[in-house]
Amino acid sequence: MPKPCKLAAGNWKMNGLRADLSEAESLARAFTAASCGILICPPATLIAPMAEALAGSAVMVGAQDCHPAEKGAHTGDISAQMLVDAGARHVILGHSERRADHGETSHLVAAKAAAAQAAGLVTIICLGESEVQRDAGQTLGVVLAQLADSLPAGAEAANTVIAYEPIWAIGTGRVPSVAQIAEVHDALRAKLPDPAISLLYGGSVKPDNATEIFAVENVDGALVGGASLKAADFGRIITALHAA
Ligand code: PEP
Image (cartoon, rainbow, N blue to C red; front, side, top):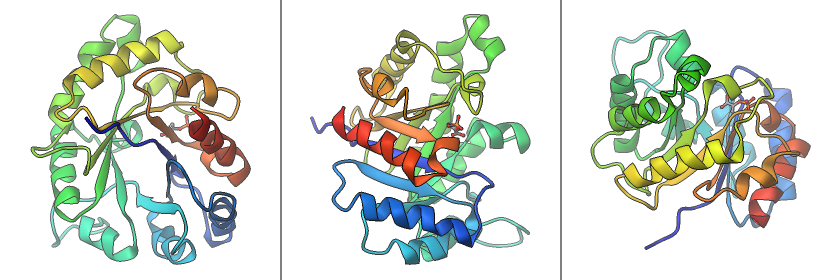
């Protein structure tokens, strides 16, 4: 049985101008032969220039969303094929900020994932419970239902990564205990259609807590928001993942 690939993925969200490409470039200089996948998902405006700047390096470029349709009358949206054309290899889908800000359901996430995978992108599908749901003891039920409804048919290790991101841990500096992370990752692993799919943890991963999180069984890497914006911080997280 092949082992899941390790992946350190950075989600720049709506941050970053051309001047910030230097952060991606210095990361690529620091990790020339990476023993884990390294990915930056910048805002859509930076995908093409970042892919150009990082061509031939160990750092891959991804996107943060795509539309489920191939093309057509969808003003302001971006298709999966357009992302590929711009140089993206991965796309984050179903991030809790998109589920909250744009009312995205798990069924829409599955439709987007099917389109992205058909275009050749690896989809990073995000799942996670709210604080109210955790306090009510609903975490596993919520996350496993999101998994079942967000995965398209044909999801496998070659085209799918799952990111467990408790909503209450994103951007807050609060992190679940290692036992809480382990409980969810173990439950997810047991329900994956392909056990070699990589399972990332996301939510306030920082250089100081990365080693402890990466030591948890069934954590294959991280989806990192704020700490991915600076090459020095993201680099320390990548080094911790190498060592895990
Ligand atoms: C995220 O938005 O995917 C995320 C994990 O953010 P942060 O690391 O800033 O909590």
